[in-house]
Length: 135
Length: 98
Image (cartoon, rainbow over all chains, first blue to last red; front, side):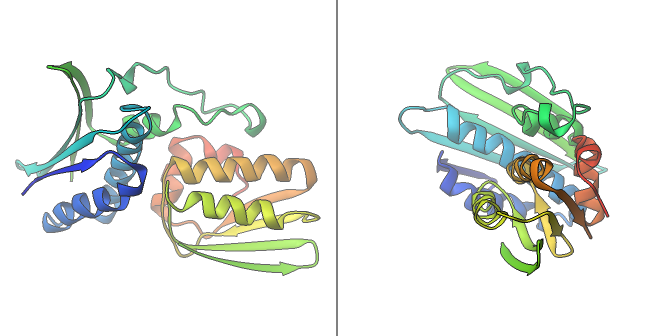
């Protein structure tokens, strides 16, 4: 089972991370890469939980694949909520002082910086977001 | 996540243990808001912090903004992985890191 389908609620974040971590641990993923992947999974999953079905509810599917040499993890997030491309955001200005800093967009920015590849497509009524990282 | 608070006069040290994520960040935010009145020096001890996401960064930024008005804030003992997150996000320029 490399796929988890779950009701897209923030309360289910722990279950999503436990599912992903189990796969990463089985692949002997380094602590550092695991933390970066966990951060990415949290940001992307919480985005879906907050926005995909608001108001209302629906499901999110998280697929984890580990393959190749060197090992590469691919995590795919699928929801059938409103079309939303998180990559379309402009990157935040990370050089501003605290008073002027806005926190919006920071999560996705962290994901972009820490993953090797990130891609979004809207297909057959589904948001499909894929991240890849060598571990 | 476990939060341990230690007050010494107008100095408050908050030790955070475990994960500071979407689920736990609101708890820390509440602890900070409930206990910073009259505090001039706030320190976060991150020796046992294992993980931080943008929800955790949001609380640090909010705390920094509060302390900018009434004193100073610093962060200490953050591990290498957490330091890297601070660097990537520009938080290493905002926070005072001991």
